[in-house]
Length: 279
Ligand SMILES: Nc1ncnc2c1ncn2[C@@H]1O[C@H](COP(=O)(O)OP(=O)(O)O)[C@@H](O)[C@H]1O
Ligand SMILES: CC(C)(COP(=O)(O)O)[C@@H](O)C(=O)NCCC(=O)O
Ligand SMILES: [K+]
Image (cartoon, rainbow, N blue to C red; front, side):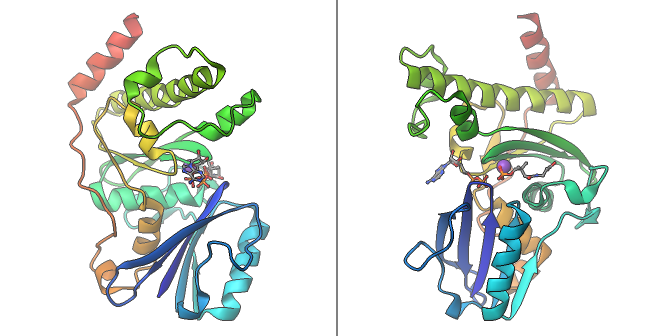
């Protein structure tokens, strides 16, 4: 089995993948801030022959995780943000400073779609752009839904937005605190992503497909006016592309990859932008 780990600021996600069949056998998640303890939702290390890790948590968390795993498992691969990989040139002035989860998303997105816009809705919402040809432009970082909500300190932190609610319901003025907060942060997130996408496409003169990932991807996707696909395993797909271990991975197949959404025309994106500026 291959153990893939995606350690975010909030949740540490894991999955076990069969090295022969490339099938996902099990998955789980634990809070990043809590110590792993027996009985928690953690994988059985006895069956693991290789580990791949993407981590944006504090350095100490990664170091502890790697030293724990190196005692038990033969191979431990840790992803790092590089100046260039798999045809993509990192747009950061200091490439190593780009969050490695963003780098994994960009690499997976480029493998799947070529030029694209990658939106990762986790503790933070990040929006990254890679051009056809592989030039990564850099991106945007804003607080995620949960962080926005917690920062208000209105006692609404435990009432999450129902991922099944219709976008129209979330756009109306709230008539209770929890509603006003949920509708406000939903608006903040989706209008930022819609606007960022249009601005960058306009500037660069290209309409790009949009790929979404992260714990809040489904909720944010509800409000997006632009065609998009949700890819929950996108960070894992970056790990597969960087450290291919199975036959399918060596052949370039990334698990759970969605179909590439066809973007609307650049004219339509520009018309939308011009219209929103008139208001
Ligand atoms: N079952 C869940 N447990 C915790 N958070 C969840 C869950 N489902 C959705 N979320 C949302 O997803 C966010 C975490 O997403 P994730 O992409 O795992 O973040 P990160 O990579 O920053 O740890 C939380 O802040 C929360 O808003
Ligand atoms: C921006 C992030 C905090 C997002 O992390 P996440 O929400 O997935 O936990 C992470 O990618 C990070 O720590 N990046 C380093 C700074 C940067 O990318 O510029
Ligand atoms: K994120």
